[in-house]
Length: 129
Image 1 (cartoon, rainbow, N blue to C red):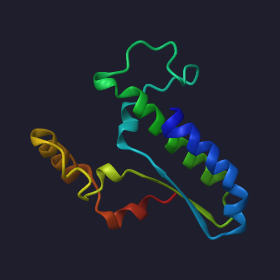
Image 2 (image 1 turned 90 degrees about the vertical axis):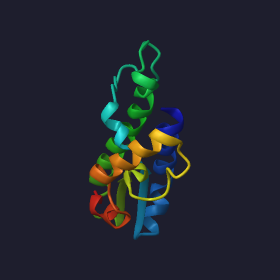
Image 3 (image 1 turned 60 degrees about the vertical axis):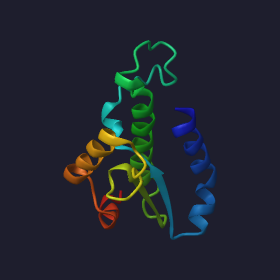
């Protein structure tokens, strides 16, 4: 949570005045479709009480990516009309070569997933908040 979300949250908020004065500006958050695996507990953000992190320990990552998406959505509403646009993107589900070095079956299933539920790079702008 600290590395994937809280640091970016703080930096973005510290830069808001500069982004407004330099408008048009944009805030881009690297999210992930793994947000769907989230088991976010607002009372245990740092997972101090949690003992099970999901298959492959995916819940912490999913939680941080859900936090990124919620932040961008909320930020877009708060700064509407300031000349700043907000984006949350998932480069992993975009049809690029980002997974080209994955081994064997993992590569196959990743490419298959991207084919059916992924996006073309040109489509990423369609998700503007």
